[in-house]
Image 1 (cartoon, rainbow, N blue to C red):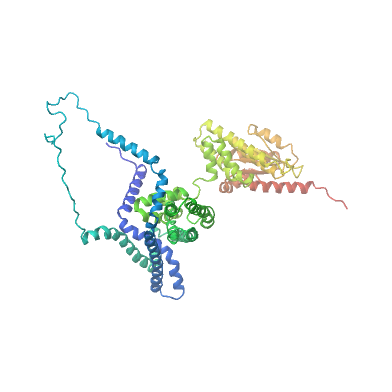
Image 2 (cartoon, rainbow, N blue to C red; image 1 turned 180 degrees about the horizontal axis):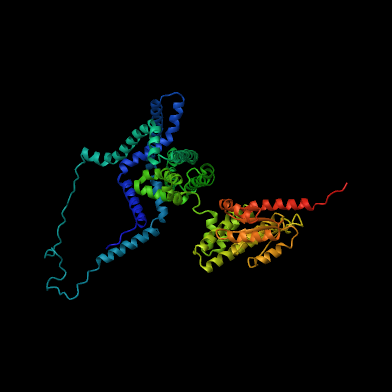
Length: 617
C-alpha cells in the first residue's frame, strides 16, 4: 500500500502550497488588488484630515469629499508643474547639442581615441572573417565546371544590374494612433480612477469597515485585533508623514542648490527628488542620476558637475545619518534586509506601484505577526527586533564552539556584572542544564560549555573586581563572610562562583566551595565561622532534592545559621518550591543574583549591629 503522509508531516507542504497560491493570486489579480492597496494607503493618510473636519462640525460626506478633492488637487498641481518643467527642459536641450557632443568625444578620448580604435579593430576582424572562403566539406568532390559557382548565380561574366526598391509606409490611421499612444495609458488611468472612488468609500465607511475586519480576524479576541489595527495604522501613518517631512527637507535644498549652480529645471529635479525618495533604495539613485547626467551635458569643464554631485552626496549623507535615525526611530519596525526584500518582492509582482507600496504592505504583515500567532513568522523574518535574545545568542555561540564570540557578547552587555550574570550567562547555563538532562549534549560539548563559561566568568570578574585606583575592593565588614555552596554539579559551582564574585564586587565578604567537596566537608567548612551565613547555589531542573538534603544537614548542624537557596533564573519555579525548601531549613529562596546581594547585605548589616561595641554610660 502507498504510504500516507501524517497530518503533521503534510502541514509544511500545505503551507507552502497556500503561499504559492497567494503569490499567484497577487500577481494575477493585480488589476483589482493594486487600486485597493492604493486606496487603503491613501485612506491611512487622509483619515486624520477627514476626522479633523468632522470635529469642526462638518458632516461626514462633505468632510470626505473636501479632503479627497484637496489631496488630489495637490497631486494634480505637482504633476502639472512637473510636466511643464519637462516640456521646458526638452525645449532647451537643443541649445546644448554641441556641448553634449564634445562631452561624449572627451569621454571617448577624442577623435581616434581608445574606444574608436577598439571598435575599428573589431570591425576589421569581422570583415576578414567574412572574406575568408569557406572550406569544402571533406569527402565531397565538386563536379567539374562548377567550382566557384553559387546557387542561382548566372553563367555570365556580367554582374547583375541593381534594382531600385522603394519602401513606402502608409500614414497611421487614427485608430492606430490611439492604439499606440492612448491604450498604454488606459490601464494606469483606470486603476487611478478606481483608487479615487475606493478612497471615497473607504473614508465614508471607515468605522464600519474596521468593525467588519475585527470580526473577520478575531471575534473572540477583540482586544488583540483592535491593538493590531491601531498599531498598523499608527506605524503606516507615522512612516508616511515622516517620509514626507524628510523628502521635503531633501527636495527643497536640492531645488535651491541646483538653481544657484545654474542647472536647467532646478524645480523639476527638486520635486522629483522629493517624490522618488518614497521608493526605497532605487528612488534616491534615480533622483540624483538624472540631474548629474544633465550637468555633464550642459556645463563646460568639470567644476559644476562635481558641485552637483557634491550637493546630492552631502544631502544624502545628512538625510541618512541624521534625519532618518532621528525622525524614524521605530516607526516601521522593519529591518534593513526586510526593506530590501520587500522592494524586490513587491516590485516583481506589481512593478512601479509595488515599489511605492512595498513598505506599507510589509509593515502590515509584521504588525499582524506581532499580534496574531499564526503570522508570527513574518515578525521573526522581517521585524527589526533581534530574532534571538542575548541569552539565546550567548548559548548558541557556545553550542557552535565559538568561545571568542560568546566572550564578545558577554563583554558587550555593559550593564554591570550582576546584569550580565542574571540576564545572559545564568539563563544560558539553565538552557545547557535542560539540554544535558534531556540527553541533547554530548560529553565533549558539555565540557566545552562549562569551561568556556568559566573562563568568561573569570574574565568578567577580573575586570569588575578592580576599582578605579587599581586596588581590589576590601570587604566592608571584616567579621562577615558568606559561604556559597554548589548543590551537585559543575554548573551549580559556576553559579556559586558568580555569586561570590558579585558579593566581593559589592564589598561583601564571600567564599565559594568546589563541587568536588563532599557534603560533610562543606558542613565542616561552614562550621569554621561563628554564625554561619550560607547560600546553596542550584540550577534547575534536577537540583531540588540534593539542595533540600544539604539544607537539612546544615540546619541540623547549625540551628542558628542563616541559609538561603539560590534557584537562579527561576522566579516562578522558586515561588512554587519555596514551602518545601523552608521545611528543609532554608530561610530564603533567591531567584536571581540581585535578590541575593540584597539578602546578603541585610545579613551583613545584622552582623554589624550585633558585633558593634556598645557605649557604656
